[in-house]
Image 1 (cartoon, rainbow, N blue to C red):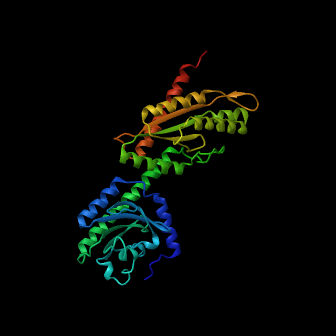
Image 2: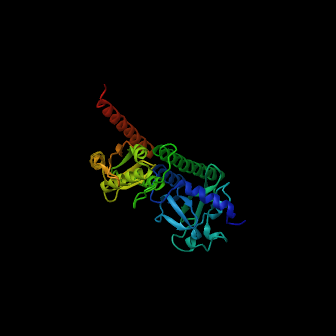
Image 3: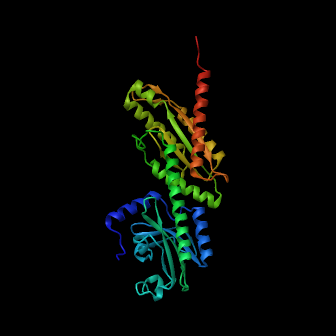
Length: 347
């Protein structure tokens, strides 16, 4: 049997891995707990949950293993990807003719037991593996042990798929319905929505590990359509460009400004909570309040609705944090509408 997938199947599998958008530095407490339980349950010193990319294997959760990735050519998991229906268990790799000369068997860490089960997505594509390792040979595995390993792999796969779905829902919530996620006046350092989402996930994972706070700001620029109606598309584009430049000048070095729609933006504010985020809101409001001067000499103005959500110990997911920021954004918009309505003169 070949140890390589057919090219068309491998392309589909790699697309499924990419959709998970997982990296070794994006810790997941559920996956970390699962590898600990797996190692303890089977009495082995090491367990990993990995994703197999085109040229390397990424360990997204691990216990008893020092490295975070491995070249695909050095991996023992390739046969599991080609035959994901049942676990691969080799009780003593040094006694297996096909694997005895493998570098991980001949050299450090001198692996003897390998037990791996595939992580399959909703389409049945093997995106990675749950693997148990030991430097001592094991007694012959029972059918019950193999079923237990397969069950744990199923749980790991569901965790990865659920995380992907939550990320997609959260990303869709931040981007206005029907909006394009590209900005006509491109600016250096302005991140697109997908990169912003990945950085938010990494920051949340870091905060959950360390307790270090961060904040998410959602912003909408209002009035660009009014400028376009009165002065034309070029004037509207210039006004948008200048406003975004003012935003970028207020964001601290190391924070992230992203375009989430034609007039919607997000800020990842690292190393700060509510107080620092409120300070940024004040600076943005002051900067945006100054009139914009068009090439014609006309002065125009835009509005800005802002919502902030800061990470706390009660934060359970990125979706929860993004929903809180959007709720605050809409509350600010409603407050401004009531404020302007209160100042409207009637005859």
